[in-house]
Length: 457
Image 1 (tube, one colour):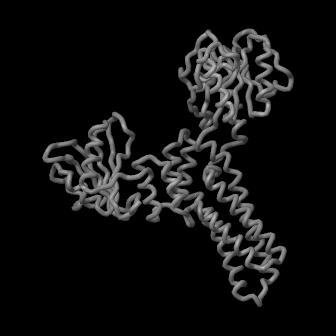
Image 2: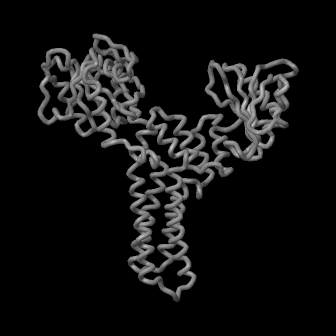
Image 3: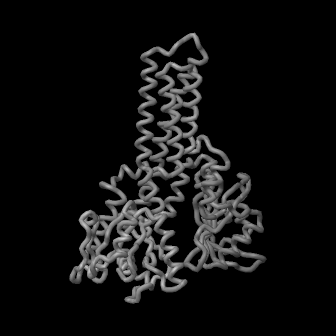
């Protein structure tokens, strides 16, 4: 990636819509836009002479012919997202107008942006740090209000501020130790050493606090894969439809209707839950059903929660008992369906506490089931301050390395080892913490993070 290039991309999803937006960023953004934009009206201006943060009406023209009527927003550096000159062109939605304008921008000297390159430039130009850059992606992909709130807190720098404080404490301690290495005749005074150890132990305690948020952060970012299993005709597809609030799966009295896994995400008490409706687990009647059952088994292996649906109008069968014991080690909720009818199902005592009665026909019991799902995934109240420091898997891995190195530093200081050893470990810890906000990062790491963004962001 070359920062001196001017990049362009369509910033809105492809497809038909009311409007589409194209973005230009770089030193030549204004002049490239000038070459194809014709202002209309006395108050509209060419981008190169327009004041910053103004919008101008006109036409995009190619060889003297109108491509589309547009609005052009002019934003001059450094008060932009990338801290470069930025032009945003709003045209009519649809594949053709946006594509033709993009082609024209590229012909006039712009380069097609790489995935996440606008956000990457914001990071490289000091507009945001790496944790905030990741929050941009989290905000785009948020599927619940809680996930969006957590992303906004991180984008506002709440996590970054805490990470910066942690890194500063480690660096200050490292500087103190290195100062004594330069003067080997002077030992660290006992009270000074105790102060350094206390600071490092507080740092470890803070890392532990952050690491405890990793599971919750993963839940909010990617959702929880929840497989719906049971015998054919127990009501699995009906339950999926009820939890989603609309008909997604085909419901039929004929066993084996579901031949493939169906995945849909629902908002359950603020948490994104990816429900997977599986084919009924039984001996397959044909090759198609056999393939559906094989895929169901694959989904079950990856599932973090299981909803085991049982037909409450029938006694427990041998097939039911096999499933009860097969998935006993997994996090699971037993769903006794058809509670609106006479119950003939008697569960063994050890499974009763995990059971919830519902009626997929009437919707009865769905709210208690949602409560049970939420409690299985996230115990206790979801508090606003918790959302400020929800770390992701990359942060988790860096903090684990930092914690281990800091603990080695504490042990070395308490054991009276030569100071070069704790200094080396403490440098490892400070660098690992710095990776979270991008203070210490490699090009490979940046490429890995920003390649997950869409083009135009």
